[in-house]
Image 1 (cartoon, rainbow, N blue to C red):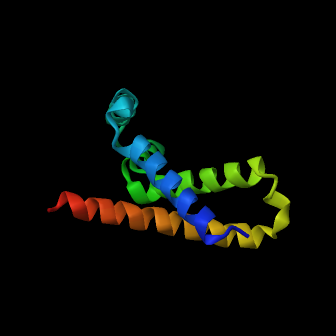
Image 2: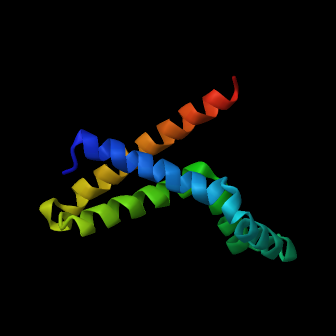
Image 3: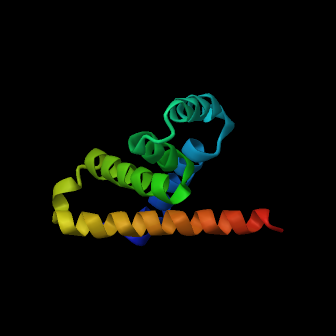
Length: 111
């Protein structure tokens, strides 16, 4: 099971990865291509799902946090240290902390 320091670091990494995918200008060309792809068939549920995924910090953040956590556990050789259910709870914790950082960041922009 991850400790609080690991949770904080993983949450920061999840937050930053989410910001990269959803907001950072370096990926504007990719997001623009996906939007153009969606506009060609806006009635497509799959295309709508992909567009929603890349534009929603909560949706993207969930998957980024899971990827960050899995990469950390595998790289550290700790995947087998706990049952899969525990890793699921860790995923919820990392994603929740990352979105809390995002909410805090968004509140700073309002001032």
